[in-house]
Image (cartoon, rainbow, N blue to C red; front, side):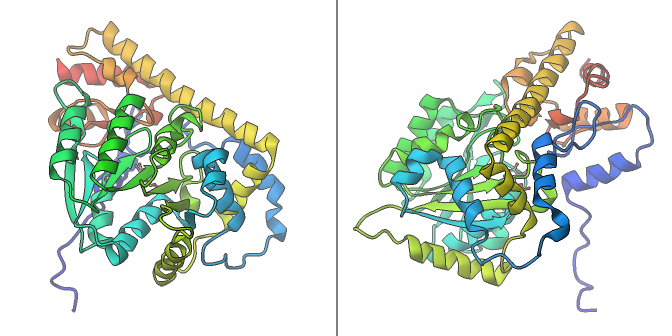
Length: 406
Ligand code: PLP
């Protein structure tokens, strides 16, 4: 066969663990692997805003035509407003090129291909660590761009490695390099820069003439407040001349995981009276056409219902608050239990981190023992999806952590 020399590949990290979890017959098993919201019964959950939006769509009579190449114009307008806010959207009305994508992954892939084809950065700078897929996305889609890493996590203090990050960006980046920043709820560390730190990052990006890519996969899901979670992106807009892209996902904040709803927005600079927005737009569409033609329709239909009705929008905001509060409550519950058990070490980071994940600080060996001896599953890096904790299993989980540490 043509394929006999292919190296066999099993399912990738989290997906292989998920298979092991499903096969595990222990009744106490706990799934802290996958980044998807679960309710307090440990079940996948449909937020009320989503249920109501689907009712209003009248699915039986819907046609299933192709979307235009750029996606749903109504959805793109609303998603742009959501991330940039009305003031910036008005100010930059002719400077934003937007296209609907196959969720956040599609937006990341499209910007990688677009930059590799058209602006030719020497390097893409990723945070170390980052979402496991970022490096693969760039390798697959931008073979002409070298992968580089900037420090992000200080293991000894379990905090943001801010000075080292700034030093590396100042010392090692070249003009026109691309840099990826997580807009909020950094995956996997749960550590975000403060506002003052974001201001410093923006200054370095501007001074070094870097092209910034914001990966925004958790707007509203991190803090429960849509505007709060978009603060960093909006701040970068205040620096004239800084051009940047936003990879927007609606997987987590609208619970539309499998519908693959996302957008890529590129904010271009105005050097002359007519910014090159239309050219950017056209080239994005050209690449999208060759790769996937156009994005799927159903998710944008649901989102449009939520965006256009005030009552549904309010309902959605309440859903976001409920989800983010449940995660915060679970962080505190497992933290209190670890403190009560007098588990060695400092566990403050579990409550201070934000978003879906906790970077627990557990070693790969401890994570392996958690799985084998206690049926508690998390990534080998020690990343735990807090969504997998419930009132029924947080004590068991804390006890399991306690026993692999002591
Ligand atoms: N970016 C980050 C940082 C993520 O954590 C994820 C999902 O976990 C994504 C992008 C993309 O997710 P999706 O393709 O489902 O939108």
